[in-house]
Image (cartoon, rainbow, N blue to C red; front, side, top):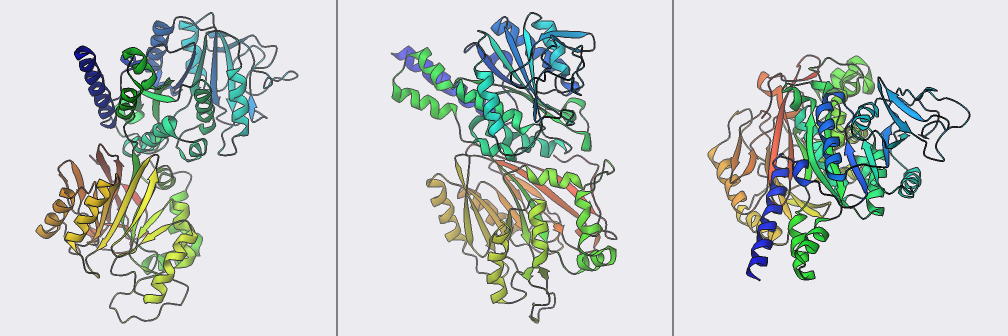
Length: 581
């Protein structure tokens, strides 16, 4: 009994440390983690050529662990829509598939093979033009030369998922005794490693515990390929996705690839660990539940924060001067061809594939020419017609607990909540909070204004303690600080530390319009000011701002940040060449 208890404690500690390593960005080695759990294996591998060595190691590990496979199915995107069909397999009469000098025995997956024509993906001799399967043909010919290979090419799309159910059912019904399904997918594209990593955290979370609908909201080159893999994993009761490794062009080359960066995930769907461990230890159901609770540590929310924003004053003048609402200022984020060091389409890719994008909306929101004079020296009012653009950019939350949200009066301020809500943007104000449920965790966002409203520190600390005791994860946004000062003051620091002592998991400050320092206190990040996001101030110190990306769970909060510069003449944006931490 003592030995069994010791063994159970050791395994629990091992599981916690594995999860901790994953959150710290150190993946579990597949050489240690792969174990044979059946004859139907489902793996996720990249097809990017720069990962060839690691792909080779993964196939070698599969051979060592599982021996031979009778059938290998490759589920790949039809990258360039070469097929006339949404789903295409090998032509019926083609019996091999080749890339370069590497060939494998092949057959089609009925009913998706063509029988009367050669498509643009495969030639009559089986040579393929689809790079999503090139790397896999090379490795299969090397390690599993006797296996028959079935390619399934999917045209990329978001919804619906009916075809994916059909494909999964068809693959699951294959009668061979030893089957390997290779889901060939590259993950985050065209953004720096700081953001690609955040995208991949969310994608892996969804592979592990997401619903089919969640796959519409991940940054990969074939969402429906992963949806097929997920459906297959559920059919085969292999519902636990194990991440073995993750790389990117940036991490492999040890340099900044800019828009050429692509990330790569290596993983496998496995039988949940609770079944494996409970069988190994022959423990009771109650003990098995404890193991499950430890091995499935809480999921991670992925958030982006940016600074002070409006769309009025100088923005309106420049936008009108160029070409109205569709001018350079609003279209800059969606240009198709850009220098490596500049933003544009990168914005939308950065913002779109996280759980929430949060800004400080430092302006009233009114209808055109509907903002009465408030008598304030600086009065800011953004026209409601620009809200769809904020929504399309990816903004999901706005803080209107600041000193400009009432610039058009109380009535227009109160109407702004519904205006934001009509665009599916959540707006929050003085000392209010909002709860967000994300893959099993509940996050509480507190919005505090110390400029215009009374701030009760003790009451806020009590709220944080109550939220934490209830199992929630509190994140605090504070509107305070001294404008144009590039360092925080002692009072800010004292408040931040006291809030973290009361279990705040992240603190983000706004208001100074310039970037201030960041600090780690008791392993919790504090950003004292992010500077401006969309703001027209021309002063040199106001032209730099931060995009802060954070992963937050019950175990850890970790953030990275990237500096961005705005040109004061034409409002164009670029990353600073220096790498952020």
